[in-house]
Amino acid sequence: MVSYLPGGRVSRPASRHDRTSIHQVSRTDMPSQRSRREIEKEMKEDLGLVPSFFDRIPDKYLDREWTLFKDFELGETLIPQKYKQLMGVALHSETKCTYCTLYHTEAAKLFGATDEEIQEAVHYAKSSLGWSAYLNGMRIDFDEFERELEQIAKHVEKTSQEPAHV
Image 1 (cartoon, rainbow, N blue to C red):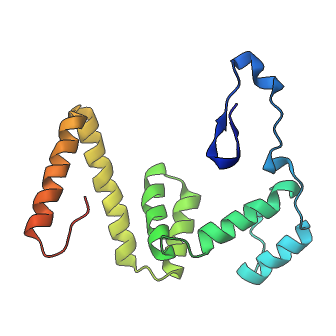
Image 2 (cartoon, rainbow, N blue to C red):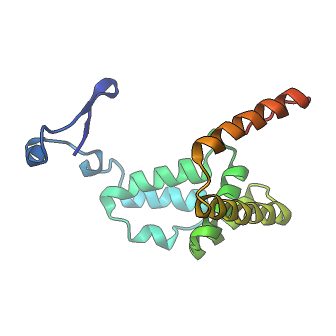
C-alpha cells in the first residue's frame, strides 16, 4: 500500500507485513455531501433523464462518479470534446465494448464530428493496431526504432514549412 503525502512525497511500508499498520483515510470512504435526489435532479436538468447505469452506483459514490462523468465526459478539458470522443470511438472499437463504442460515437456527433471523421478515427485505430502487431511480432529493436523516429522528426522539421510532431 502506498500513501501519498503533501508535496507529492510517497510513504511506503517498511515491508509487506507492515501494511496493516498504516492508517489511511480514503476519500472514497467519506460520505457524499449531496443526496441522491439532488444529484439525480442535476442529471435530469443536464441530460433530460437519469441514465440507468447511474442507478446501481452506491449512494456514497454517486456524487463523485457523476461529477467525474460530467466534468470529464461532457465538460471542457484540455482536449476538445469532439477529439476526445473520437479517441473514445477509436479506443473502444479495439476494446470491442459495444456500450462505449455507441456512447462515444453518439457523443462525438453531439460535439460536431461527422460520419467521415468517425470512420477515419476507427480506420486509424485499425491501422495503428496493425502496426503495433507487426512491430511487436517482428520484435523490432525499440532503441533503433526510437533513434529512427528522432531522425525522421528532424528531417521533416527541416524540410517542411511547419514543424512536425512525431
